[in-house]
Length: 475
Image (cartoon, helix red, strand yellow):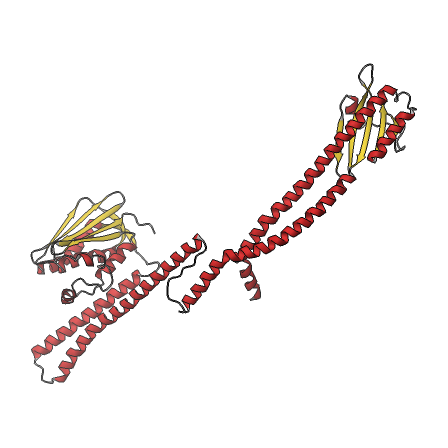
């Protein structure tokens, strides 16, 4: 449990901000320290090379003038070689034209032959300088030219220790490390402070969310500090608002369901009590009451079936039995089934198809949706009215319009007709047996097919429902 807690702590935004602030402040300083020290060493080495080269060229000229390579007995030249060696704490050697060391201030290799590449290059007239960071010395070889022919007939080799440079580097490195430690401590404190400041709006937001969750506060959440936090508050307030609306809608739905289910039961109870109270009920009245009870039972069954349909459509991943269906033939079947109801209500059914249409649909659910639209158009029509069903399609969708010239829908009700248990005319709906769920089921079925439905109506003139459904269903 403690391991899990530590991991959660390490993954917090505060820790991440703290680490980022430390990294972005310390890493550049470390890189800068390294770069400065490297440049310092390179610069000092180059300056040392220039200084040694200047002294060595002057000495090479004097060696050539004194003919020291042919007669290495000149006290003046020997003294200058020793002084150069002592001054720079290095080693000076002279090589004659036979690559033999004729003078070594260390007196170790006199008489030996040296054929290093630097000496060979200097006999070719080049001045060669190099730096060995492993053994910490600067090397220089330069030709000694014959004054008559101006061609190299000897080489001067100077090897100087660079330990003094490295000592200076170590000193500056120690100073840089001290500064780095001080800066790191300051950065550590500032990183803690800034991470606290940057995360504070999130901490406050979390506290307010916790208070709202426990019912301590009920107002909207507002946390200022930065744009992201304010935008997050707006989104959270929107979610809470939607949840509140959804909760109110759920409560209203439960209330409506309770009322709708209770009404037929109450009617049946009253009718049954009336029959039981009078033992001598006439047969005609008995049959009439039983017919009313049967109708209430049918109504109760219809409400339950509609509720079950809505529950299935409310599933996160509703099941659809998709297959290719001829929409023209489907409409003909639906209208043929509703025709007796239309004839009884003296309403004319018209089907108009502009082209053959085949689409990927769940035939049962789409049939239910279209049947609800056509049946409503018939039930809420007037004598001598009509219901016109129009089918058309393009390369992507098929379009279905159900138009009637019935009683119409008030403008203030158009936004609510697809809500559950919503009725435009409650008395008329009760009279014709509507449950208030038909259009909600219709919209749910069409949305499941990735389609859309809209309504346009003029009170007293008629209503048109327009449906658009993709020809190819993509899950």
